[in-house]
Structures are given as C-alpha cells and as structure tokens.
Amino acid sequence: MSIFHKIDKDKIPRHIAIIMDGNGRWAKSKGKPRVFGHNEGVKTVREITEVSAKIGVEYLTLYAFSTENWKRPAYEVNALMSLLVSTIDKEMDTLMKNNIKLEAIGNITELPSRSYKSLLKGIERTKDNDRMTLVLALNYSGRWDILNAVNTIIKNNSTSPVDEKIFKEYLSTAKYPDPELLIRTSGEIRLSNFLLWESAYSELYFTDIKWPDFKEESLYEAIYEYQNRERRFGKTSEQLKK
Image (cartoon, rainbow, N blue to C red; front, side):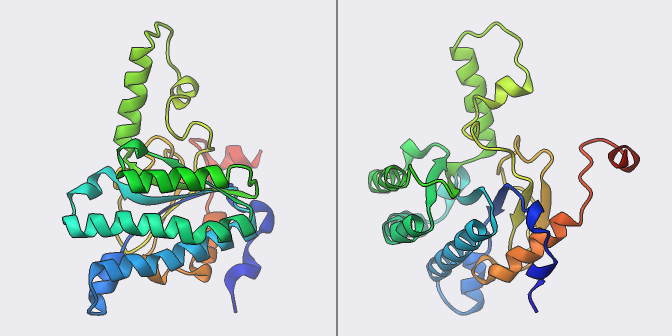
C-alpha cells in the first residue's frame, strides 16, 4: 500500500529542491556507460515533475548541472548538454499539458549556444503556465550565486546596510520561497554547493536510492518524513506549542 494515504495533503511543501545524484553509478552497476544513466534519469525527472504538480507542490528545483560539472570528461559534458536540448524539446508538450512553467537559475548565458537557446525557447513557451514552476539549476553553484549577489551590490554602489531581505533580492532565487524540503539521492550526504543560502532551514532528506530509481513512492516517503519532523527555526518545542 502506498504511503500517500498517510500524507497530510494540507501540509505539502510549497518548494521542494532535489539534488539528482547517482545516474552514472546506477548505469555502471548495470554494465552500461554513464550517459545511459543520465538518459534514464530524464524519465525520473518527468515522473517526479508530474507527481509534484499533481499533489500541489508550487516550486520544484532540480540541480541539473553545477559549475563544477564542467570538470567531468568532455564526452560526458557534451552528452549532458545534448540531452538538455533534446529533453526540453521533447518535454514541452508534457509541461504545457500539466500547466507547468519552466524557469532556470545559474549562469545560463555561459551554456553552449544551442543549449541556451533551447532553454530560453522553453521558458518563453511556458511563461504563462501557473500550476507549478519547474526550476532547473544549470551551470549553478551556491557560492557563485552569493558572490554574484555581493558583486552586484558593490557595482550598484549601495551604501545602505544590507540585511537578509535585501541580500536575497540579489540572488538568482529571489522570486522563489526557500525550499522547505531538500532531497539528495544516491547515498551522498552533502549539499554540493546547492542553494547554500536558501537551504539554511530546509529539512534535509538523504536516501540511498539512485536518481533513476527514485519514483513516485520515493517522493511520498520523503514528504511523509518531512511532515513528521518538528521545524523549530531556532525556537524550543515548548515555544511552538504555545
């Protein structure tokens, strides 16, 4: 029986962020090249995106390509960039059917021209959709985003004190709420430079399941655990009960 019936439908996280890890190792465990794992991972992206929209998630952010991923073998990087183009093109009908808006964070202007143009085309086509926003983190790192915000503030010659609210306005995630739940697949227990500012009070969920095997029920299990945690934001349990 699915754990879905145990989930409080009124307490679905508004924003879920996911580090989609384990594609390459999943493929190697099956005697396949790493690129095969990335292709299979796209199927999981489709499933988790559709399920998230169905249950009422408002924002889903997927760590698709970090600034550090450029260090991978050239053939794998090229395959990932080609996969990005083909996936966006193929999934447009799915996004439109499900009323999902596509957006992106990161230094996307530095993506290969074909990838960049395909991304912008997808963003433009889905801009009026309003059921859920799918945010792809591409050529993204938390440190890059923070440094970019600092340099922009300096460039603007701001002499006023900068508080958290003002600082957030300069981040690429400014218009999104901070993720309540951040999931990482494949058994690694670290953030890997993902949403460092925004995840300060996110509930972190780590699973040994590799991304191609992370399915609908896996997401429900993560949400169920999230709902059974006490989010104190620095307060005590007694204060929350008042």
